Image 1 (tube, rainbow, N blue to C red):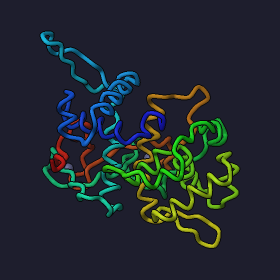
Image 2 (cartoon, rainbow, N blue to C red):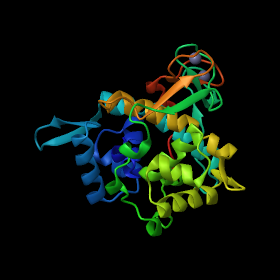
Image 3 (cartoon, helix red, strand yellow):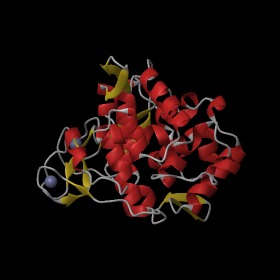
Length: 289
Ligand SMILES: [Zn+2]
Ligand SMILES: [Zn+2]
């Protein structure tokens, strides 16, 4: 999942597709992207079954890019990223526009609820446990640490700068999941993640600098901002488990303490309490051109 989504251009292209873009020039008009980067990303999105390429004109031949079931189901994660960045990351060049719910017409925030019992769910009442693989180490191959710390901070984030520092780096994502599982100590992160000490120290320092974790006498704890990432984590994990099921079972199992059932996140509008639908993502105000 992180191999596919740990790339900001990929997320932005899918977001534009969810907002209605289908043609090459739509993406060019909506994103500050170069031709070579866009061409490359469209190709890899088609290969990953996140976009379907189809011909809409034969003379001259023209192609468009349609959402697939796999990419259409990414809207809860993208909506959660949008909300978190909008609320917690003040460093955006342009403030992110609010989202408007097409059904009730209100500006809204998505609320995470439990599919089984419909109650609102937070990180306090969803219990995360490592799945059958026992720890994250098998899910985070050592060779996938592709972003180096020196370049990580220097990279100019487009719309989701801090989200990308979490999901653009597998170790960072695993470490943040670890905090929701209840890890607090450096040595526990190291052993649970099977990560080199420098890697763990680097990610912990990054999260502390971004105000996602706070170091209280040797224990790393989520801040309110860190806890606010919960919707992104659970929607991302849900998507991964739907589309990339591991034969040995999920890496992380979530249980809703409120009802005792397996936790499946459902987003509802905080204004009208109606379950949000993917098609309503089009109600997000367009970005300033
Ligand atoms: Zn429940
Ligand atoms: Zn609503």
